[in-house]
Image (tube, rainbow, N blue to C red; front, side, top):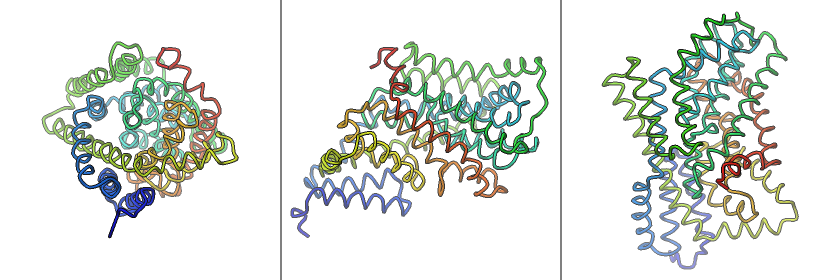
Length: 440
């Protein structure tokens, strides 16, 4: 077949379809994008340049100091879980608000937000908090829908509360300043946590039996919980505070956090040779998977750029007789649908080569779009018919039906959509803090 007669746009479109087909066949997303991008590039500009791209890009990514932060944050999150810091955080929240109606669900949400600050992974958070919070809520007579829904939804805070691995991924792929993205996420993180707490209150207001009030903890018990949780508070303050104050770079903060998490696990007697190497192995596997995704996304993005598809999309959108804000809302609707079907990382990295040029061409700030993009991914993680957090939650609670968990997450989905509308309508909420600290 003479590929020289094929239009680059057609080749790029076929490459996209091939990538989606491979993902549907459960080919790892990084490998699928690398294969599709390599073949597409070869058909457009020739096989020798395509082979050069295939050799140069992986070596550049592996040598990149910015990517090292991913491994360090994953390492910190793994050993923080081993140290039992998430348990301390849950007990602290339970001691102060567990006596309220729906208090344990609110404690779960607050703990997920706090653990997200030292973990950065939604799936790790849902697995960890399910083991800690679910038995306690069952013991207190909480409805399965509220208990599982608060865990599955609260765990999504792990990707919006800095540090976040997905934010780092977005920053690297779009060449944005990671610190600016983290600081921009502070206000949306607070809105997310408040929205989820309101969702819990609304749930128990509609069904008081779903989250019965428990006994009020005496102040002695509250002070004891505060004393026992000093480790996770110190870790969050050192990492987040060090980044925001400028004392640490991102890599330095991640290194300090990883080292401190290992020390806590060792000091508490929860770290031995087996668990140490087990967590190193898990971190290495997760890091390798993310590296493969980044390498594949870059190769695929190069192919899409050569195909001129982004230029065609921009020209077509500019010709539409609708406001730019309407275009943004249409894109967000697309992301919610994609997030309900594909893995959240896949939904982001596949669409970035098409969507990001459109966003910047319309004059929107890429930092703002990064936060909005993460919020949409959050919704997709709990949105039917898939919602990966829901499936992980069901795996942790096999006796609870999927439809029960889906009904439990719906109040949180509504809270997410309201927050998304606010952030889109008021970009200043996201960009205010980075401007205050002089990063924009």
